[in-house]
Length: 140
Image 1 (cartoon, one colour):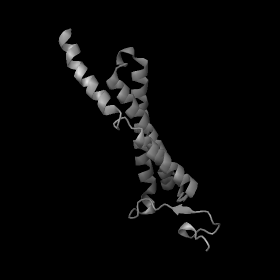
Image 2 (cartoon, rainbow, N blue to C red):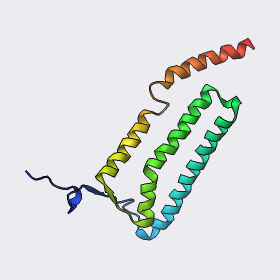
Image 3 (cartoon, rainbow, N blue to C red):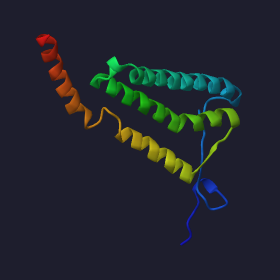
Image 4 (cartoon, helix red, strand yellow):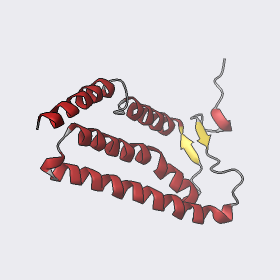
């Protein structure tokens, strides 16, 4: 039994064809590219500033800011996993994604999802910190 290729690729390696935004005319791709680029740069700059501020300022070395730095780092990683390929689609018309690249992108995105601080381990730590906060405040 012969294996069939995905999306009709000739060389035998599976390739995925990315459509982008189906109802968007190609004449607007450049405008959409700049809009998404602006948002991507805002995400990178904003989260980097949060990381630098929390690391540089010793008074921010508290559990709440630890979670904030985790969220900022994961936000950078999430967007860096998916947005650059989308930007290349809109700017260069790079509509093909190889199977290994797709697998890597999916693996990274799901790995970052599993390591998100709002997952299983942060709730007990947050509960402990929130129960200790009023006691510390009342005793001073």
